[in-house]
Amino acid sequence: MGISLVVADDHPLISEGVESLLRQEPDFTVLRRCRDGEETLEALRELRPDVLILDLRMPRMKGLAVLREMRKERLPTRVVLLAAVVEEDEVMEALHLGVSGVVLKDTPPQLLLQAVRKVHAGEQWLEKQSFGRALQKMLRREAGARQVAGILTRREIEIVRLVTRGLRNKEIAEKLFIDEGTVKVHLHNIYEKLGVCGRPALVRYAEDKGLA
Image (cartoon, rainbow, N blue to C red; front, side, top):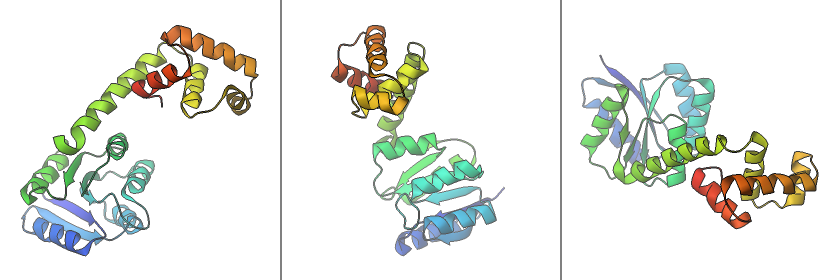
């Protein structure tokens, strides 16, 4: 069974090179080459390709914004990111948004072909260099967040998140429409439950558990 693809990259040399590489494979069909995020979304809606090869940094809607819109519209296309550099935060968000693979632009071409086939088959292609640490960090944070959810109430978690953003008690009270004294009581209970002492320790705990 053939694999239909859309290639999205604003650099002509990269996109033409990728398209040429893919067209050499008898089971691959490149349906369209896109130069920006909006054009990419239009192609996905119209053509419904099996796999999208997506650059993160494009004009008129960046790669992550495309992924968010794909998730919102429940577009079924699987995604392989093709990037020169991938920041850890970008990787974590991309994973949350359902990306199945990532290939760095300096990777040997054969690995891109392998990644596309693996992703099309419903598997993941996560290169250690770009995804390894970020994936481990994400899984650790998700486990930490679940652990905290079993200790703190929903309101207490809300207050912890506001503390990590640097808000003081009065600002938290105004934002949540409660008394400043109530915020102090909540913080006291949070410190007791988590076994931390003071705001700096709470912020470090929240960052480690993925609440920040």
